[in-house]
Image (tube, rainbow, N blue to C red; front, side, top):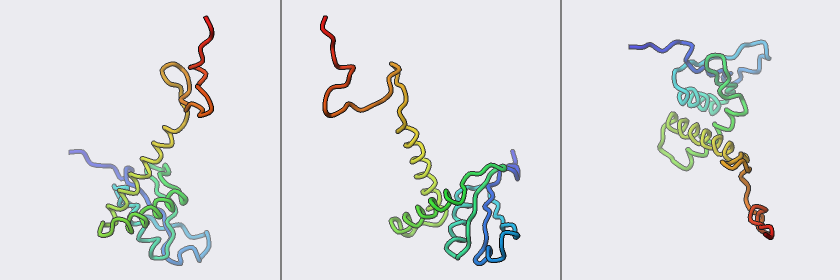
Length: 137
């Protein structure tokens, strides 16, 4: 049996409702869990209660900053409207999945060389691609 290390936990840094009113001197509260969807669901509960979710980290590395969290929380709210009756963790998992798919899609959208070394480009509708132009022999 292997035991997961405490370092493997996700850490949600947040301020509860009215928590930032005391200034920046106060450190944020922390919520620790082994599950990313659980941390995101907790961030959603905190934000809906008037608090501020700041970031989710794992092993000292940022997984989602405040802007990234805001996007995921917005996606969760959108999914809640579309798929009512789902639990918070399930909505969180769906939002994370869609976020991962979107990131993978944006990586695919970048022009990369294919097997021939040419960048993937669409032909211009005004004429043929240069590779289709034949020189007289």
